[in-house]
Image (cartoon, rainbow, N blue to C red; front, side):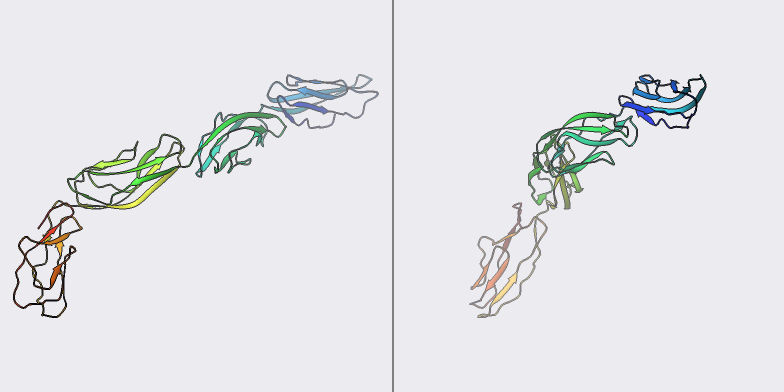
Length: 335
């Protein structure tokens, strides 16, 4: 008997292999033992059928000639289990966001290769047969139904149908005030729409002022600041597919509640007929400041006070002039 090779097979795949012996007299007849269920050997030496049992087998083939002389040969034979796609569902995606999903298989003779056998993947996504992953950036929001087929090296196949929804890409609006005051309620918001619900909001970078917090479910930012300072912060909205958009970073400045103070304690003298200019300066409080003359006060003739604290003009009369100014901050506090 020749040291032949029976190869292998996969259950559910039709198998056929013919063994030929040499020598002997007359016509040879063949018989085999140890074949897996579903296979049989004809007297002419052909093993055929569809294996229904998996495993590693030792098949013993005997050839008998017309003179009843025999020769036997044992052959290793393997039957692989049928391939199966074990990933039952695939995740949905969000338009313009990165997508990646792995498809797992079991059984079959390697390599087991995946392909799209019906329908079509979402636009922008592709199947990598070598890694069994679907990835890319979905372009069009729609619901897609398609079938993946797994084929092993012996030609056995398995199929699985999927439905994947690509949601409209996230977009949003925001109200982001840049200033607040210690002890005064503060509010802002980020509002995202589209995407796959639920939308979750989080602080992406930086930190909100102490006393102010973000509501993760609706994007509102509320609270009463407790410490003055400058706080750069960004806010991110993330949908159920992991797609996200961000606003910021923007800077929130929280001012103390201390009233303003007039820092200018004296002003330069002027000369009649010569242009004059001087600026008043305030500290503390909350800018912007608004300046005005106190009731009953007057500047030297020819000069005027602007709301920004600038005194300017051309003096027209000599002599000393006493006057009082009032500064008012953005919180209405005065000095």
